[in-house]
Image (cartoon, rainbow, N blue to C red; front, side, top):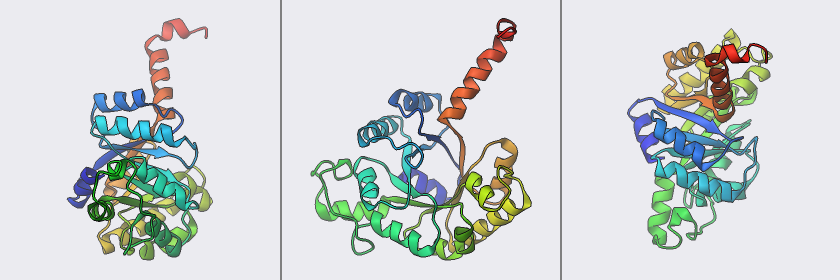
Amino acid sequence: MLRTKEKLARGETVRYMALGRVLHHNVINMIGFNGGFDGLWLDHEHVGFSMENLEIACTAARSQNLDCFVRIAPTDYALVTKCLEAGAGGIMAAMIYSAEQAEQIVRWAKFAPRGNRGLNVSGFDGRYTLTPVSKFVQEANQNGFVAIQIETLESVECVDAIAAIDGVDLLFVGPSDLSQALGVTGDFMHPKCQEAIDKVAAACRKHNKPWGAVTPNPEHCQMLYSKGCRMLSVSNDSRVVQAGLNAVKTNFAKFFADA
């Protein structure tokens, strides 16, 4: 995640997409060969792939020079460290309701003195015991990536406190659940959604933190970008497959007329 963190620190834009339903190393290779993307985030919150699947996906991402992190539910300490030891560059916690909960996520992801992550150098991130412990701890704490999703009413209300937490690298807006929480389900351009996004942007400016978001279309993406969003998550594997199928049927429309 070092490249992503450095680009965001310079105020540059990073382009991401999500994988979950079609988490396969060949798909990751296709994304890498096609070019243009800085990284991927892997959706464990909704899909629940195995650690072996995750290790293979992370290996494929590294081979394509793509950063990757994993979205998880905020309830499982062991899952945080398993993702990091499997080779993920970081984690993103979904459904956060308080600054205290966000602080706990950071502590789970960081070694002492910042956190209480269990120390084990036998995974990929410790080069399978080859990295000296002191170097491993220092580099993991410095380079690891922690993102907090802002998608609940409570997280919007305490977004300033969340952005202020040392060790939170990015705030990430989840527009679907945010719109649902605001009572305007699916209307991502609704003034209520934009007002909440403005609060996120203001908190990030105040505390010099970048923020990102899922975006379903160019109009929404432009709105986010104009407000300072610099991690643009522009699609996911299911949408890409459906778009490809629709493109094929459009190109061969004459032969699908009676389908």
